[in-house]
Amino acid sequence: MGASLVVVTTAAAAANALAELLASRHGLTPRLLTPTTLLTEDSDDVARACEAFGDVRVHRSAPAWPLASTLLKSAAPMVIAPGVTIGGPALLMVAGPCAVENSAQLKTVGDAVVAAGAHAIRGGAFKPRTSPYSFQGLGREGLALLAAYKARSGTPIVTEVLDTREVAAVAEVADVLQVGARNMQNTALLRAVGDTRRPVLLKRGFGATVDELLHSAEYILAAGNDRVMLCERGIRTLESCTRFTLDVGGIAWLKQRTHLPIVVDPSHAAGRHDLVLPLALAGVVAGADGLLVEVHDDPSLARSDGEQALTLAQFSALMTALVPVAAAVGRVVHQPASIDGGRR
Ligand code: PEP
Ligand code: MN
Image (cartoon, rainbow, N blue to C red):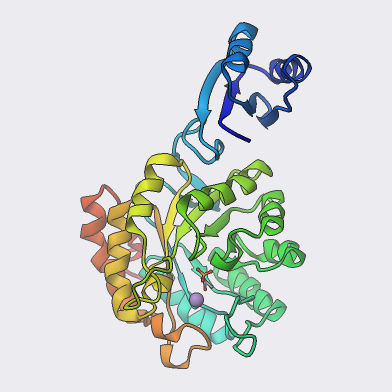
């Protein structure tokens, strides 16, 4: 499809009638973006026909990702779990191990990051590893550990789904379904998570442009799931001092073009624990609505990504360092100790 045109009508009946008219008189196959909004090809003739239909708003040269763009919707806070919101003044903090390893680890790390101000715990049960010989995650057993931790603590869970065949099982446990960098353009998986009503954290592929990231988000939105968060986690460049290059410019560019909340993952970008803090701060200044950070109680024993994991103390220090930086860009950092009198 070339340039596209978006027509906003006032009622579903009007949208259907206009779609029929564009099909019969102009040979087009318009698509319903929402019950009252159509997407079709852009031309002077089509624009005139829509205007003549009356009571419509016509947007010519619409973005290729109209649902992800700010054309039809402005940025607004998004609820991603009971009582947890992203996109408001409070930075969303998600922290936890790269992989779920055992129940003691989940409890130690989960309880500590929540005490330090995290809203949700991350941890992969299904891990996308470069080598088939590396630890692939605990799979279903890992999901069961996440479910048990959530049942005990009430802490919302963010965990990755690798495969369409696992979407239902992961969605039963996860508050947020993570689609990893390596799956950003797995269109079958995008459609499958789009068919759920779970919020999705869509990570940018390390060889993908931000435009391609928005196209991938559009797959999920077009399937009817309107809770998508975009995650910048670093891209591959000629630079090798970090594992990936955090694309700070891409974050700022996205902020101007999408209403979707943006999460920054400084851990995978840095690839080393001592650079996680500065990259987290940079992400927040560039416009991140939330952070996804890898934390381990003993990084030297981590079964994956130990080099980039923060210790519990380092995560606490990150939360403290974020306060003035967040304030400088109009954000606040959740400090549970100040809410419950420091009992935790
Ligand atoms: C992860 O979050 O542990 C992960 C595998 O991330 P990515 O898909 O960004 O590599
Ligand atoms: Mn990891």
